Length: 340
Ligand code: PLP
Ligand code: COI
Image 1 (tube, rainbow, N blue to C red):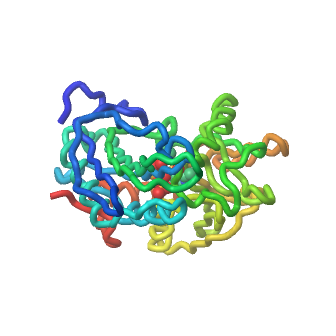
Image 2 (image 1 turned 90 degrees about the vertical axis):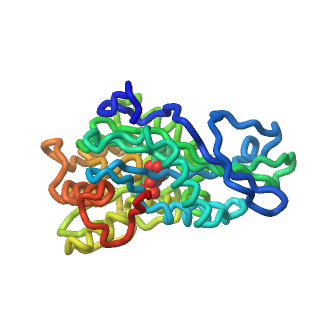
């Protein structure tokens, strides 16, 4: 393991590790997997990723477990979501097998950067696919680079598993109803930067988006899906403009396993009044319990956690998910890859 890293106090940031892995798409085919220790990418100034946003990324995690093994969470699901993004913005699909081989390789090669079990930190894996071929007209590239790097990370939101305040931002949309919100493309995040800054400047953890068309229903947070809990039911938005979160999909399954009902449907913002618990969920966020959501323009404050603490069902879901990721709970859904 790497000496001199303060594992327990890691933030969610970039740290240089030993290696990244790369694969080039040229002449209509993916090439061999290459190992690199170079942090930079050399590319043509007319690359489509630079001008027309032809790029996609993914996010997943590897965990050092109590039994000494390394576990990677649901990497096939990330491979499939990247393929869906590729179809959405006309990039060549990377086969699941190649994606998984590269993930396993980059984790193994950087094993000394995987935080110890006790720290509660993990290794964040960031796959990135970019159009590198030159174009000046708005057209897809004919050359691509797929690169995966890793970095050890702590919690995305301040305090980790503690309840935080969020704010509804009505003046910006993250994505259009029939736009790219369902794909993990950089443009969605560029569109969120100003709203995110506004939320932070106002003292909130993160911004919340409503559906862009009617401004009536909850969409998601800038980097995480939303779920609410009431009447033993896990409720999460159905929307054409949110990212299909793998964490959310896992939590829906775990909620069902725990005997809860699961509903995927439109959630009017006013329904927050009746929610017993709520959270933001994602790879980086894990579960970040929501203390309160303020809708400033409407002069409304939806207080969800009166004592500022995570609710009992959120806690059970969090413990179960983390338990599976760290190998402390049985992996009954085959979500985890144990590195050999
Ligand atoms: N929504 C957005 C906008 C995200 O950026 C993320 C992070 O990946 C998520 C939701 C959560 O998705 P996942 O659970 O697959 O990480
Ligand atoms: C993730 O949860 O993996 C994300 O991509 C969130 C974010 C850092 C963009």
